[in-house]
Length: 565
Image 1 (tube, one colour):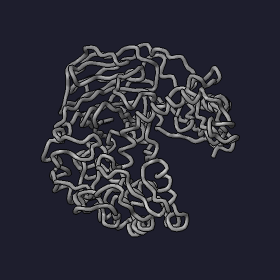
Image 2 (image 1 turned 90 degrees about the horizontal axis):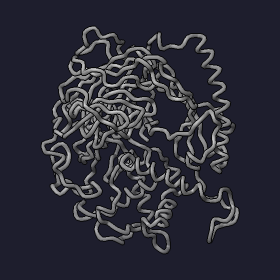
Image 3 (image 1 turned 90 degrees about the vertical axis):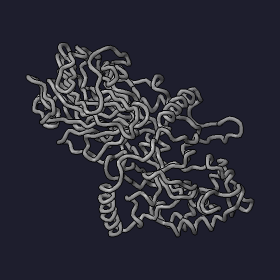
Image 4 (image 1 turned 45 degrees about the vertical axis):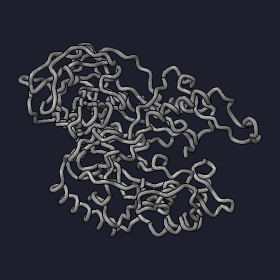
């Protein structure tokens, strides 16, 4: 909502301020973050210490929450906030990562805001009393016209993704406030011209950024949706009476059937799709990097695209390119954990289906070497293996594929009522005879960790616990290249000739892909019919290429299903 000229000026101004401050400011907090005692909502701590300097904070102070360490930083201390953004107190439509967690400059991104979030931000600001220390007593009324005027006056980053005609002509705020009243969030006056909060207690307010709230609840929401699918599948599908008070012929609240109830052709199976971030810019297919999309959202990927920082429980990130055959090697340097946390990690290899919200070695899709006691993990079963490792150590990871090489499956991503599944070509898992995974600590082999692994496409991967910090080195120059190592550096995965299909393979793949499109189209229609959904709006389809050494590239096939909106 800034003009192009303003945006460029803001960006340049912010970059200068950030660069200057990143050289001066501390990279460690002057207090122990783990020692702070937070309220259940993680809004305030009893020590009243926040930001880079441990300053005190009032309820009405403009502040941002870091999505990695979850600490709050006063807006006046955040160098990446240019004045043109007009960042206000209680604003929530952003992503922010502090300098302590990134290791250098702050990261900040404005997100599209919702009208309900905009309305609450306005109401909170209009109710501030006691020198911005509280919102006063509940049931203080605020005129809707006053809320609209406040939003118009503070038009800027708060209203990103919205436009003035929505506010002034379409009356988006009154509609939103009436809806919030019906949901029990607000109270609406009898003449519908004023609103008030049901509670002004800080614990009852919505203060966390939209992205952090979504990330924190992501796994729980996914489980809740899947439970709803199971329950709703038992309901009567189609229109008709919705029970007591229901209107005849109205749309019923039917959602997709659970995976086990959806019938597909014998050639395919339906599996839950690993949750990935789809909103990031594409990456250079000619460079092997850590993946923006194939990472748990709790993990921060630094600008070099080779370093990652963890947060809280074990979460995973993998590389952009995978191995199908041959012998390959990469290194990982273990850094000092942020804020002196008791951080840990697991390094290794995973398939495309590896669960990002779990450690490497969690299931049959990954193999890992853990820092604690040097143990190894596969399918959550740990056993003694090599030496323990920690900050300052360089761990080498080698994968030698055997015969047969990896089986490349055709996969179809299908979105059903907000839940993503994968229609996967059924290929029986086979063991790659002669394959082996070996790990090295500072150039010293720890022996073969896993032999005869599954014949799958494997990606370099790491899972991080708390503030663990790692930096990947895909080659060609390694810190501790093992003597006589017969393996290619993973940086060559992007250009490997032996990983490129031959012309005959290409013709066969093309034929197979055409057949896949046709079968997947039929499978998708069968899926829609068995789920009781109205095609085509309930299903969005796309084909994901998981070819040999290919970068993560999603190709949406418009013709896969007619009239997909």
